[in-house]
Image 1 (cartoon, rainbow, N blue to C red):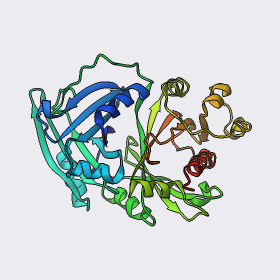
Image 2 (image 1 turned 45 degrees about the vertical axis):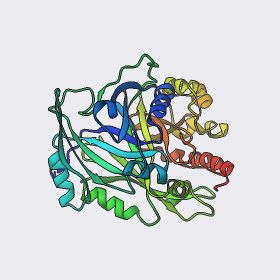
Image 3 (image 1 turned 90 degrees about the horizontal axis):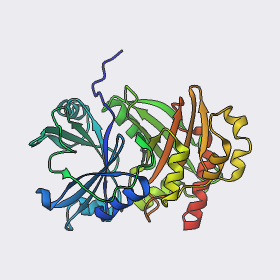
Length: 364
């Protein structure tokens, strides 16, 4: 067994560059049940941006907005709209993580730097990945503060209860035509990941749209990055629509884990989160397809939750509609009952649901 040159302990946080971080933070608190964690901005000595960190269980989101035009953050938002900028990964040694990846060909985004305050020191570094997306390496073993230096605790009297979201299950990237192999090689060679699952257009094409997908996983399976590439179909695929509106490659969706998908989705729906709906006929032969499950079928059908089985168990999943006006970023809610896979059996029904939305936007 070769030693893992890039041991990852999971996702530290996901940072979004957004046009209005104050309002985005309010939305994710209200709609998704995140709690106020920390704030950085002019009041904390950060002059060019405002950032709001929110947390729910082991899930941390950061929303950052620029305070002026003509800078990297403002340019990112102008081009892509609101979107994922940083996929920050928790490591034991951020300096070594940067060295190991850059010597293997990664383009450096941030050389290792030490941030300090009265509660300790945090070391971070970073590399570029597909599009304008970045992987940060975060080392916090000597840090005891609320989030990271430059932030202060964010006290709020408005604290909606959580919705049972636990941690990041996986993050999916959409890459351009014929770019799949380049990025699979990047994750294999630069980060030591392996390709654990592949789908091609024969697995998941509908009448119109096709795509290819490969799931990349690190050694311990804590970090999984599926990668999608468009494939030739009769009409425009959902990945092409994303690439058009995002104006390049980027993170298509973040999958959030729950231990009780029925209660989580019920709570999210009651707070205004909109989900893709599959036809009710999907449920007619569901149990023939996936076998016995613990859940009652009725609430699954009412909520539109999909079920799929692999050799190790089954999973339940559902996808939100895009959470912004551009048809780009969305979220997946997933509950795993042993299954390690990604719902291949649901792809056709799911993509047909996505196509109905695309058609309503005139983009199919």
